[in-house]
Length: 548
Image 1 (tube, rainbow, N blue to C red):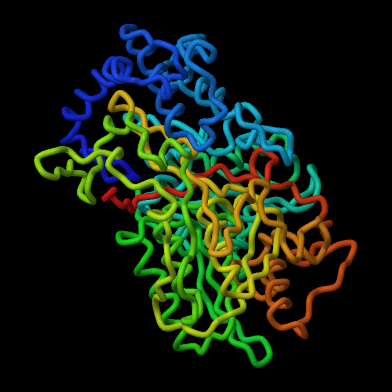
Image 2 (cartoon, helix red, strand yellow):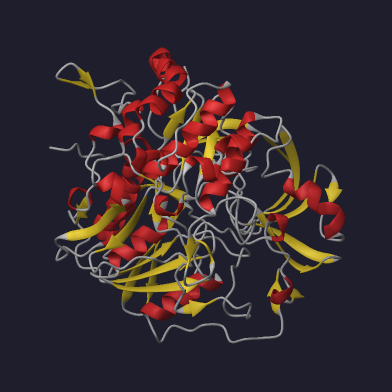
């Protein structure tokens, strides 16, 4: 039995959902009122694909956050999206068209314009749950990442980063997933790779990049590596075999002493499911911070694309001072949702934590029974743990820092002194919950925006760091050192914000790597030549309040 990674839905209830899927389009079309379809009649019959294209449009018309920009059915013509041979590709094309309708006046581009790949939405996507497996990362064409339930299926590398030139470079591991084959072999961020499957690496990036990228993309079942671990230990012909494993969301936790301060450092890979994966690890980390007498924090979210809202909320409550009271953040849905007029959600049953259909007074509870008002979607501070008096927090961030990660940063700003080190964050103040179509596809379209206690939000272009990585020799994503190493560039700069007297290496034309002088500015970057790592980016809402 396959469990859906977000809601715990089990195929045991597939018959019920299949009945809904088989009838939902026709039922929706027969009962839609003018405010749902834009006053245009919708055909009651059609092929399976046509009916699903209609349903996707009708759901967006009611629940998409920017539904005010969606025209009526006749104008949009959802059944025109049939040029591809695969149904999912056609649904993706339609969703993309929907997401490009609302223009952000501050940029002149759609809110969901994705600069790194303008052909796909920045936030929304569709997941085929029948083909989904642990190799997929819930974004188009993405592979080899750990799921939000902690399941991984690869050899354990996030990606690699090279320093040097195309014809002379050193290749470093950027991150290793805990409990993966690579982690069990003792490899960490900062390990250097010299050979892959017997092929020497470091003399021709253009011909070697395919070999390099194949490792995190899990295109092979095993890989043989040679190189040097972060501690200087040389390894030869180390065989790593792809396997399924359960991974912690915590890359690294340590306590750094700088001057009179004890600084707690936590590197977090994702906001995994709170109860099954994240809570124990977060509690252990913060308990250690308490016993170590931590006075300040560095939270490393440079590769964290988000995850569950309740896990982000829990981290905020662990960090926030005990004086933090009242509203933490509010979720804002569109006016149709807030007024209780998103009747199409009667086709989406609300399942419990065990994936079972819920009933009340003999009636199946659906997403239409939930309260989407602003007042009903306020999350308040509720201090967790016993690290009570930390008020200075530095976040290490990058273009991969998104959604639930940004929610944590924004939520803490009203109650703590928050500083950032790194590059501009991704910019995703919106979240979602899944909408099931055909009992096969989960649609994640932007449904709500979050704002903090001061009603601050709208960071669609991301947060700008206080110390910005502009390719200098003192501020760069330094894969030559492990997470939490005081000599790692971002970490060193974060310490300097907390302890102003702490030294930061002065700028030089070159830096030394394993005794070899290498220009930092010639770093080869991450796979695909992009700083955006291909993994899940989003925040998923799982806690719901029913309407009175």
